[in-house]
Image (cartoon, rainbow, N blue to C red; front, side, top):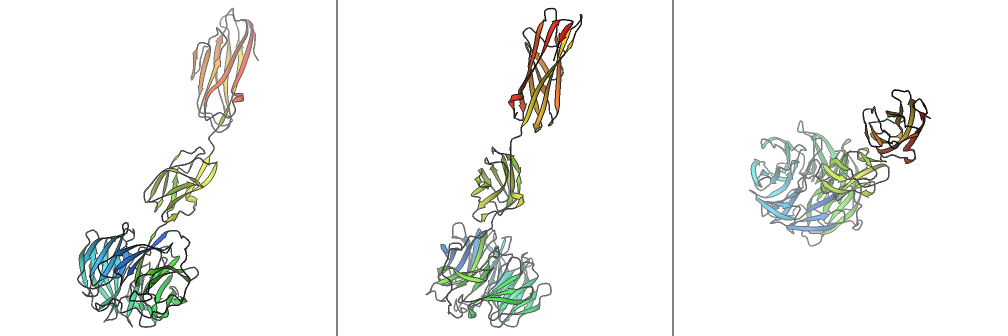
Length: 559
């Protein structure tokens, strides 16, 4: 099953051991646009193309059109699929009668699974746990356990197998056969045939829609595409499309694409109305079609010459305009292809979603397909300390001007699109201005005369004060008594601490300075803010004084 769609577009098959290319039809080619550098779409797509006569699988970068590797296989490469993770490709090889297990990271064959007969088509379930092989030579569908790379079951299926498709859930496999002409339905849990649906013509490609409610079968020898209801296994529509072979469907199920080798192009079908909306022609002897996972591009292969003496082509059809261009050239007898798209990353949350303009905040970015990240930016500024898994990244926010920015993650699959969930707000550091005030009041008399000094911390904002300290400096020889909670005294000073003070609020603490017979003249007490949080924004009002003039213990004036 191709990981680029929810299901595996089936494969044109009518191969027998006598020849590996008997179904390649006309070699006429209508000129199309020359190879070009394609704009990078969200998610980078790699095409795995069978080189039938060349006994290899080509790895093609669809963005550049370059063949980045050629993986030799033991026999004629009949079909190829890639698991959803993109880590492993499976190629069915005729004459060698094996499935080559290809490590996509190294582009080498990691294992070879022997089969009972001649394989014609292959599919892998979305979980990546099982590979299904249409073994036309053995008249069976063989099931490979991907954990052990061994055949775990074999389901007898009569006739010659042309293609194989899986439902999105992987619960059902569909095999097209000729002699008899039918669509065979297999329950993958029990490895048993549950239905055989006769079709009016030779069934080539088959594909299941993403909802799993319909199977489409290309009747290559006829003039229609059959639509079959998966609930009842009955024909519900016949779509007029002559000589249709391989099929593929868009990720949303709205559009079906069918290759027509004899007509040198690809049909575009509206699945709601079951009608052909356009035909993309001039593409040559198209043997296979595949839609990428974003639904933006359909890729098609043309062997040009089945013997491989003339290099074949990979075409790209823009689904928005239904126009085709040459994506890659120089392929040796290409007949089938599979696509794997490295998904573009998506961000669903940034935690915390705000921090200081100085940067340095440890941020967790949650989303999907984040692994392999090469960069994380806050606005246009790169983050540091990046570590990522598939669903989470850790990074350190860089410094940035105040305001809200978008956080974006870049991976080999592209850069995450902008959403409200990726926003991060840089905030100015909190500031609160402490305005210090000192007042005094005399308490005179013969017995216990004293002066009361009050230290007031007034918060002029803009943010709340979380803590503050005001220190009062006393005149030489003076002492302080009756200290309130939060105040301490040492020689010549009184230190008072304050808790939280909201914006525009004040907090006061009072203490006494005793008078005695020699306490004559000015008694000045100066209060100074010595600490506060957050940062004080206006040091000019951090200090204040109050001076009382003592004439005698029974006569004193204070401001």
